[in-house]
Length: 254
Image (cartoon, rainbow, N blue to C red; front, side, top):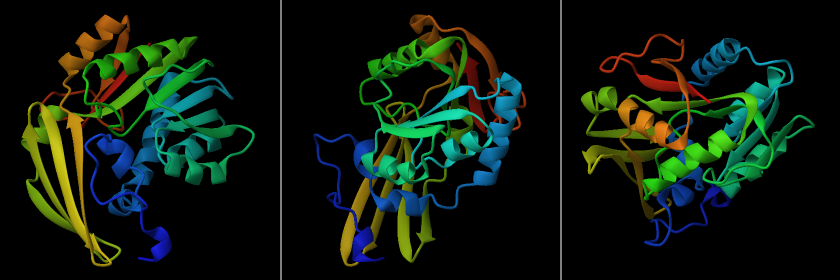
C-alpha cells in the first residue's frame, strides 16, 4: 500500500472519538469491504424504486451514502439524488461524481434537512451505530421530518435473529495483501466486530459496534416518533420477512 493511501488517523479510536467517524474515514474500511455484492445492491434498488413507484425525477436522499456508489446508480435511474454521509473523506471522493442532479454533502443523520425528499434510503445496515440509544429515535424523527408529504422512507437493516444464529466468531480475510483478523460477538445487546491488521509495519485495531435492533425495537421507536410502518421485507428481492430465516429487515415507512 502506498504512503499516499495511509490514513492520517491514529491506529485506534480515541476515547473521545466515535468509532464510526474514525474507522469509516480510513482507506482500510473500503479495502476490507471492496468485494461487497454491488450487483445485488443494484437489483435491490431497482426493486425498491419500482415498488415505491417513484415519479420521474423524484428527489432521493441516500442517507449514509459512503463514497456514493449507490447514489450514482440511483441518479442513473433518472432520480435527482443527494448523498449524505458523516465521513468527510467519503464525501470528498463521492463529489468527484457530482453533476446537476447528483450532489453530496457531509451530514449527521440525526439532523433533519431543510429540503424535503420523495424518498429517503438508509441502506445496508447504516443505522444503530450511536452510543446513546436516544440518537436512534432522533434519527428516525429527522428522517420523517425530511420527507415530502407523499414521500416514503426505507431502512434496510440486518435481521438480528438470523445474524446472531449464523455469527462467525473468528476469521481472517486477506484483501490487497493485508490480513484482516476479525472477531465477532454479541455483548450488551450490540453486535461487535473487532478488526486487527498490520500494514507497513504498523499495527491497527478498529471496532465496529451496531445495536442489535429487532423488528419489535424498530416498531417501538417508530411509534414513539409518530411514524407509520407500511411494509416489511426480508431480502433484496422484496420477499416476505421471516424472523428466523430472512437475511435482511427492510422497512418501508412514512
